Length: 365
Image (cartoon, rainbow, N blue to C red; front, side, top):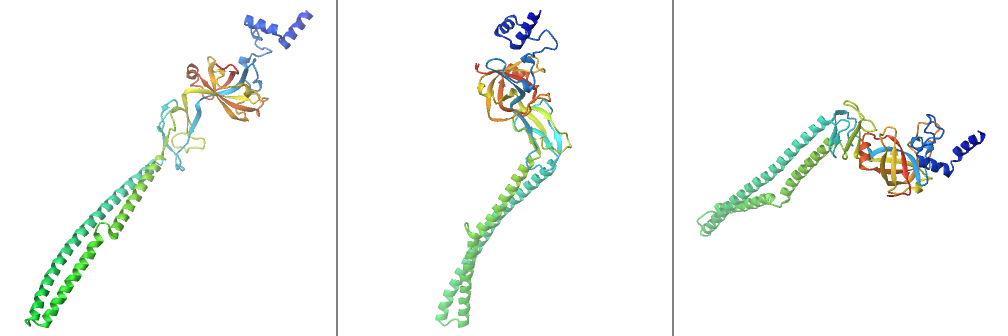
């Protein structure tokens, strides 16, 4: 009896190759015959401190199930200020596309009024520019008519002067009448010059016309800029989806002021992934394409996938077990596993679920 007992203890302690071969051949599992096994099978290990090598080439780590690209916490738009939530237009589980409206803020009426005011001001500026151009065209026509009238009067005055000169030379008229005719002709010439100067002010390309139209056009451009800014500000009343995804969580209700953590969580659950934290001492054995098995108590069956990315930075672990004695300051490297289609569909409802990740390191398919 002593020999049998001693042999059993030694076999459990050292687990020689022969004993391992026996269990592998029979399919028996150490400790499976009792509710409180001394040695716990690796499939039941869920604590971070027991992450270790399972067998040659295998690496186990804790991970969490996340959508492709992780979870997006959608915040209020820039410029929303202290606006509160007026309306939530989605519910958890809704599928949304990029730029879909998720929520509306209570500053919407004020921003809509600003757009209406800017639009009205734009129409006024457009009318002012049209009025300025019409006024210049009317002034140009009036100046042209005045010039023609002055030129006609000057022509008559010159004819009178020629006739009076002939009469004065023959002594038929007096000096006073002759001088009056000269003055009238001279005045007619001045009127022509004045009409020409007035016409030049409204001629196409003149500085006066250009200045008037330039001012009206500048005012119009300013009004267009004000309208564009008002429309841009109006967008700050809408919370839009930055990308396609599923609404995972709604953090606020109507009437509440959004917090710093965002108002809605989105994720692309069409493709689920697993973020695993592998100890820095084991990361050298993991390569892209390694097959992976993911297990958790909440899952009806194990999930499968492959390693798609390996982090380039070593950091502190963020996924820890509930054991207060566990190592919470381990150095780890993030490894991303892409689940296959069947596993991804099974994992869609388990975002952020903690799971045990087994990487068949060195067995790339």
